[in-house]
Image (cartoon, rainbow, N blue to C red; front, top):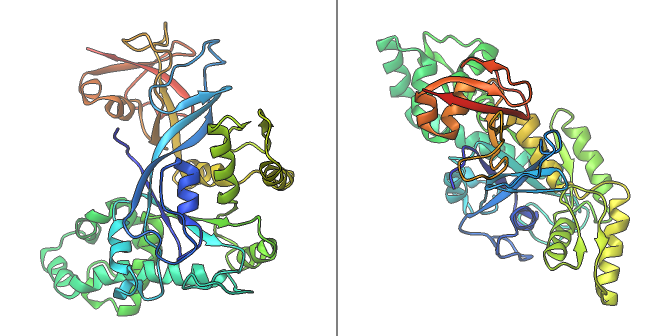
Length: 396
């Protein structure tokens, strides 16, 4: 299965990254309370949650990718859980170089932060630790990663750009192509900073670092998964975090509770839908199981576990993706008779032609028009997609 989006899960050792990853994917990964339990990156499939369009058309969909329960459609995205980062990772400390190399293909990052205050920056047990430090460390190391790539080649590179009169946005995009940096990303940064684009060789080291910072934020946007909110000091630490970073998206969550609920659902002990704030017990449980679920039920009285919120917020609010359904205007089925079998995620601003190419290159190359399955209206190739559109592609 191919995906047009890869989300990286990052964080300091013992923050709960692997638990978060397993809660999203139910992949079989090592979860341990010691630093560097994750060494090689773990890949898995998670799901964003949307309202399916099946009820509007009075049908029951049959997804071939993802699944649908009670009108809630779960659309797959790819996750990568990388080794924990330590201070100095950009200089190769810890598993730093490997950590950073594993992130090159990521489109966005989820920074899992331990809100309990019970682990320090190196993942060791402690008390009263301020998790604000974790964000400071990770932000600095990611900036130095981008800066290091630029600085290594900048002297020769900038002079070549000046001599050839090539647009700096094109040249930097080529240099950073492995990091999924686009030319438009660089143009946005340059517009903000107002540096002398004709003489990049004159940029100071401080300017270059600031440029790397801005470029990293745009090309690899990140949100904070404020994890372990079930712990005693988590609420107090959450307030500290929000005060220190008022402009950053911070989603409180408990990956441990989400994992427990999903595993219990899979074993048919309970009925639970990811992202909901309740569940139903289906079987007789032991006292230990009852107590564990009662603790979770008390937690859910205030909010859900937050894990699904993290995924949805990143994909739909931060990355601004849209969910679009291929749907025949008459039958809503594919060639094999499956009802509403697919749902694709495309960037805001994508067109009907982009959608056609996303489904299959043949559809894009032979595109005549799209038809809105709801209104039966014909749409041209420049039609801008809307969230939860249902379109049929007509080809020659």
